[in-house]
Length: 335
Image 1 (spheres, rainbow, N blue to C red):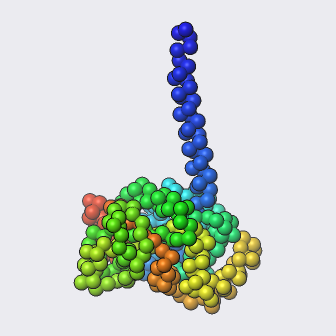
Image 2 (image 1 turned 90 degrees about the vertical axis):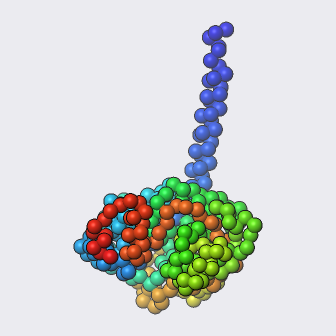
Image 3 (image 1 turned 180 degrees about the vertical axis):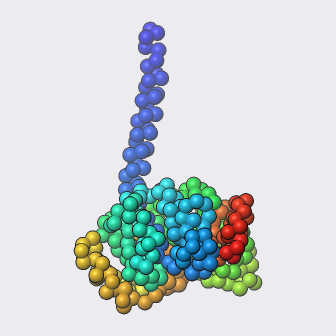
C-alpha cells in the first residue's frame, strides 16, 4: 500500500497546477481586451528651468530623469505594463520632440508611437489615440495616463487601475476617473467633487461625479478638502466606445474631423492626413472641454496614499524629493 501513499498529494498538486493555469489563461484573455494610452506630447514649459539644469537642453519633463535614474516616460511605461501589455499601449508624442523620444523606436512598434504634427492640447491627442484603439479593438477597455506624473507606490496605484478595469466591465457606459485623496488644500490642482454617498470616503469606493473645480482659491480648496473632494489625476479608465461617445457629445465638430481620417490609419497616407487635420485643429483641453462638460458620463474612484504628484512646478519636485529623503543639489539650484 505504501507505493500508493503519494497519490492524494499528486492529485492535490494537479488541482493546484490546473487552477493556476486556468487563472493565467483567464488573465491573458482579460488583458487582451485592455489597452492604454500614454500622453507624452506636452511641452512642460513650467519645469524647463529644472529640466535644463538636469539635461542641458529644453526637453519636456517627461523625457528627463527628474526623479530617479530614468525618464518620467520610461517610469510610466513600466508602471502601465503591470496591467496592460506593451503591445496594447499607444504613446502620443509631438513631432518637435523627436530628438528626445527617438530612442523609443528601439522598443516600441512604429504603429504604437503616434506622432502629432504639433501639440494641440490633450483633446486632439486623446481623440486621435482613441480612434486608433477603436479600429483595432472596438470593445476595448482603455486606461489613459499622463506621462509626466510621479507615484511613490506603483504597485498600489496600478491595483486601483485593475479595480477600475473590473468596474468598467460591470458598467461599460461610464468612464471612471481616479481621484487622489488630498493631503493638503492644493490651489494649483484640479479637483473632482463626487456626489454624496455613504461609502464615498472609503478607498476604492466609486461614486458619480458632481462637478469639477479648476485651481480654486486657498479658501475654496480648504472647503473642497473638508467636503471629501479629490485631486484630479487625469488618469481614467473606460470602454473605448464610451470615451468616444462622450468626446463626440462635447466636441462634435472635432470628432467628425478626426473620424474622417480613420480610413488612413496604418497606411502611407496617415501622416499626411493627420498633418492636414492638425492645421485646422484648435488647441483644446480634454479636462475643460470634455470632462467638465459631461459629468453625467463619469464616476470617480477614491485613491488612497500612493505618493502622487504631477511634478508641475519645481516646488512640487523638491517636495517629492524631500518626502523620499533625497538630497538634490542640482534640483535645488534649478528651482
